[in-house]
Length: 391
Image (cartoon, rainbow, N blue to C red; front, side):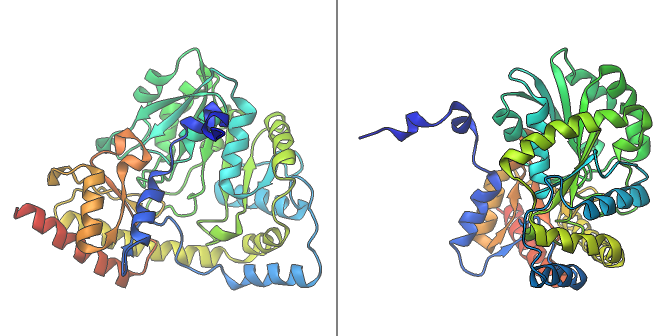
């Protein structure tokens, strides 16, 4: 009998399954589970976007677009980034419409990394980052972020991680899973290091619109390193368009051209109807984006207070829709806490270790749920935590 395991590539073998999926799979086998694990807006995509996409299909606009995406959409994306975040890009040579932000990260990594190149990733960080480096033949180098720094990237940590082999820094602010945030002042401390080292920065800004007390600042807004930055963003989170799979990449024309070649061969072009919907979203849905953000802010405040009140230390995240409670006081590991919580109270959270070694002692809780659901879930978590205290 043929051993198909031996036919797999070494890179495919070393990739670990997503730690998030493990708990989704466990939860799916149980009845009446309340899940706080999904990083997905609970809002329906705004009607303006849905209507435009439906109309494009009714009008027969179902063919491939240009590889880079509809020029009309690229113009809207570039106008939007200039208007909202004060960074200017050329829609013809510096913008690619992708299948979600995930494709953008993949083609950016593949366009830059040679075997043996080092790419810095932040720990805790989104589950797909390290595998993207490994699949490109690169060497992921983790920076362990600290709870006491609110999971910000500090100049000391960045300096210590850069070596002669470092080619790329991949970062994500506002952060999934921590909700960590970098202000303009925070970036000002690391920009000189990036400039001097000559490394490329891939900045995943998918949660940019979901910023709360402080205004979001793109790392690409610093003129001295703008051409060293690749901005990844999209419509999934802010515009509640997860299932539409639409993102974009903004970067200098040389890197953009290289990324486009990879995009042409693996994708051809992003889905057509979602592109027409996104055009209308950028033109007419900013008020709805703000409404959703304000709702998330209310939920964030509720969750931070609820977890701190039950004795699980939780800093106040400045962006995204996650809190990252510290569960070290319970004496359980992250995996043990989530497994026992699921079995005892039928509440599903994601262990911090799904996002890297530095996530040990934490859990990720998404607050992309109604206040009513969050109240029920946090009451159940409190019952579980109280049981642990009384053992």
